[in-house]
Picture: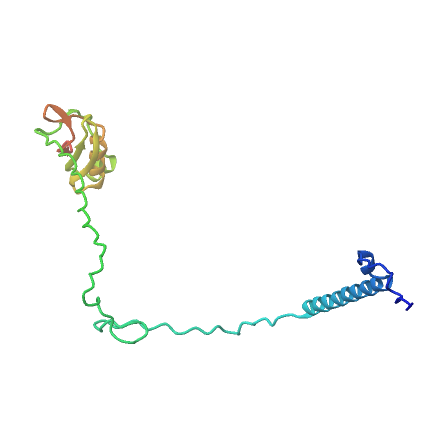
Length: 213
């Protein structure tokens, strides 16, 4: 009887995951490769960082004096308008283009006339002296024998008090003129009247200086 092959009576077994489990040496190889790759990545990162720290981009330095293009000179009076680049005369507007609106200022109103002062009341009569102290004859005029008549102009206020007293015509004696002015300053008047009320007025009064013979 012939002998059967050695595997004739063996059973067939399906492979399990245990058959494909890597060995300890494979795990060590994978771990070493991972560590080597991580080390190379760190070395490359450090090298790029050092190069970035030491690298300084060039900085443009300004020139000593800035260069500017000269401005165009103003056009003389009477010359046609030209563009700033000198390419030619600038047209007012293109053909068929609507004219540009322009701001038109309204005319300024004329200044208001200044109010005229109220009319000054016209006196219907002149001031009248009501208190006339006698002027004192100057001693120096007596010693020199001076005499004459002084015409004194008096500006009288509405209250009858003289406001301005001045010589209208001199007696040719300074002492007599001064004595006449001093005396009239002490006079009191009935003021001039206009529309039934007192107003300012003026009058000329004569002052005589005569020597007794």
